[in-house]
Image 1 (cartoon, each protein chain N blue to C red):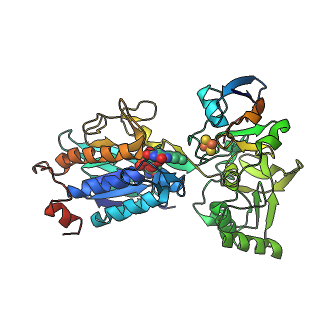
Image 2 (cartoon, rainbow over the protein chains, first blue to last red):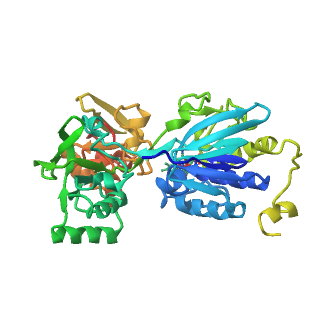
Image 3 (cartoon, rainbow over the protein chains, first blue to last red):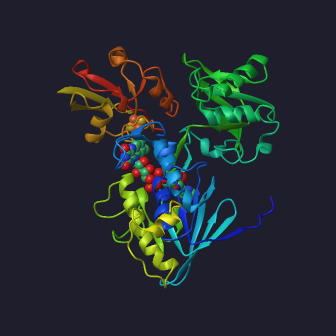
Length: 349
Length: 106
Ligand SMILES: Cc1cc2nc3c(=O)[nH]c(=O)nc-3n(C[C@H](O)[C@H](O)[C@H](O)COP(=O)(O)OP(=O)(O)OC[C@H]3O[C@@H](n4cnc5c(N)ncnc54)[C@H](O)[C@@H]3O)c2cc1C
Ligand code: FES
């Protein structure tokens, strides 16, 4: 692989995390003429609301007696539309480097997709951390993670001609089963039951391939692994009736959903307290001037991990961010109801 | 009060008093019972409150809903008596219930 040329972007503020709080920060910054780029490792915006509970009702969003997780995210996206934020999805922020001075900070933000952003302030809205694939607790699985066990597919070619075992019953498992079936030497899909959460049309396609003899479907769970020198030779499995059997394979892709891990945030030179970023309650600024932490990722006396608290934090952090982005401009307090200036920004006046 | 006994994977057991209407998970958390993480706080969205219902109790406790079945896909070492403890409501008939916690939550 050649090192991809870094794509350089210049903006006012970079928001790390596209959860509900990161999204609302776009709005509060936008009202103050501050342009934002938003980065999230997930392929879609919405953080926990979209990933963990899209269909579940939330009852404590002010002004909404009830709204679903996805409903809230859709509304927030609509609300921030006038400010045209740029999203960089499916990318992890790996580095945050402070340049400049405490009075006039500058930052360099780097993602794992070779994107480099330069900005005047950073808003960390990283929630419970970046979403990362869950690893099934199978003894010795780590030993195979370099050559044979993959939690995501970066390059399909790496699996060409291999005997691939895919484990899981959701969309990721089914999508990769269908994508890899023509590429792999043989694909086996294993799930703990003969029912799938995945989209019905993918399940139908998979069943058709099984009926044609073009792939295998096994019901069971992986309980152990066999192999040598980091290369898998078989998975040891248990069927629903307790019978133990082996599936020969040299690659395994377990899809057991996502979990939140603090991830790279820990290496950005910020003070941390039990994996949270301590902030003041006036500006929600971290130990590095110009870096703000809002939403589930921060901590302060009395902190409540609620969406509504994150919204409030976004509004106050934006006020201070304005000082860094426009050091010479004075901020006057305005209401969206009555200020034509604000309404023009929102595209309604 | 309804009594619930949690047995961990090494066989150590703890019995707690549970209020009817609360969930088995809530009683584990309130009493500091190890082996139950309950990351999502009982929303049936994390599968880290997985338990095995003692065979003598499976019928009384009942089967998981289809939403819970879907979530059980994310648990590890799922067995016919697997349940997510945040989805089991405590009721008087469950007095004496025994559940086992797995070695690890996924
Ligand atoms: C089941 C459930 C029910 C809930 N019910 C309620 C409720 O009723 N009311 C309520 O107020 N709250 C509720 N919450 C809590 C609420 O969802 C959180 O408070 C809220 O999601 C926090 O928003 P956030 O934007 O701070 O972070 P998150 O929603 O956690 O989003 C953070 C985002 O940052 C991304 N990220 C982190 N690090 C990086 C990185 N280095 N690079 C790229 N991306 C990164 C993550 O991938 C994630 O998408 C509930 C939570 C759960 C799980
Ligand atoms: S506590 Fe999360 S599923 Fe039960």
